[in-house]
Image 1 (tube, rainbow, N blue to C red):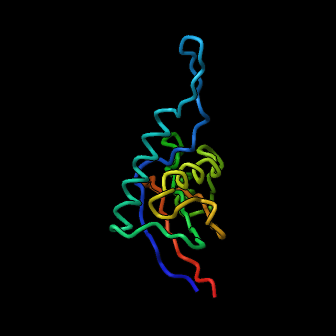
Image 2: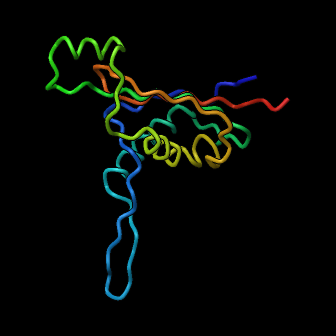
Image 3: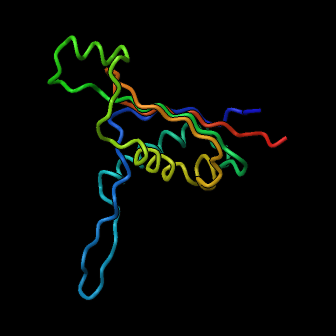
Length: 144
């Protein structure tokens, strides 16, 4: 049985989790997260925090349903664009679906759930839409 936990939408273009960058600081090398990734994770954290309405993070098993919407390229003809919006053409361009998942999950850690290792079920799809966004539905899985 599923119990709704959080339901939120992150407006704007989805950003995949960027690889860490490295910088030399004197004799030391430090790793840091790219600014684009940090900014996107902050948007996800804000949306997740609002969705949780002050409820503590879940400590049990989690199911996540995620829908990633990307805008069709402006350079496409009207016919091709409409075909994409109707679902006849599926996006096979960046952002990589697995990198978006990782970024969203990392941002939700400590807000919606304690750790993303709690996720036991995941459904993700990427489709074209006139409005770029990521819709996230999180459910607590009742262990019966």
